[in-house]
Image (cartoon, chains in turn cyan, orange):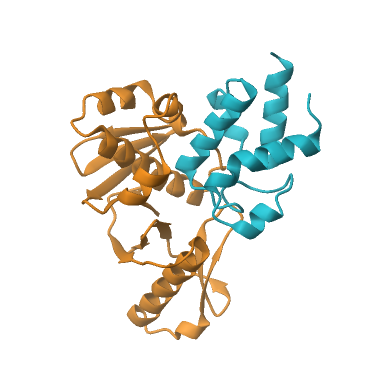
Length: 85
Length: 192
């Protein structure tokens, strides 16, 4: 399992192409909400999910996706999936 | 209650690739996937269905539902090229979609209610400015139509992102929905 700081910076790289709020992106932290803060449009949030799957070689089923509204939840889901590999 | 969603066609061509591997499976149910594969214009059908889901989701949240991100939990049915129905859990919403070469626009309502929609083309604004622009348009029109002082009106979003109109700092019971994407912004307001 990667450490949290590194995972956040990896996630930051993944979401970068889709964000529409630079300030929220610069201040990205565990509490950052993908839609409300980063203003990622929901169709692009699907791209984020697919990019995460590719990057970590995991599959995010609908149930996991369901929770992935902020950075903290995303990290938890990714970690759970990685640990089950 | 009303929810709306606008999709700028050029912006979507630029920023989203619906043909990307696994994209369709992530957002559409088996039934919806068959609507898409039967379509002469799958690009438009994909984003037509998507705008229906988005607008319906906004009503679901307005009605007190909890936020979620699971597009397959929302299922669309097309009754005609314009009219559709969307199912979220036990709620069924009716949708109306208009499509032209510039945008796809859908509204969703709980009943067959009367809604007014205003669509604006705007350029040279970032996401935040667009949002401010459409809020101001809504308030200007609302003030005029109801003979209110615009300076006393305000829009604030709840934690879940539902826009609420305030007059003299008191929330009004008026369902509105706001959307912007690419070069387009729109608001829809429910007539009581």
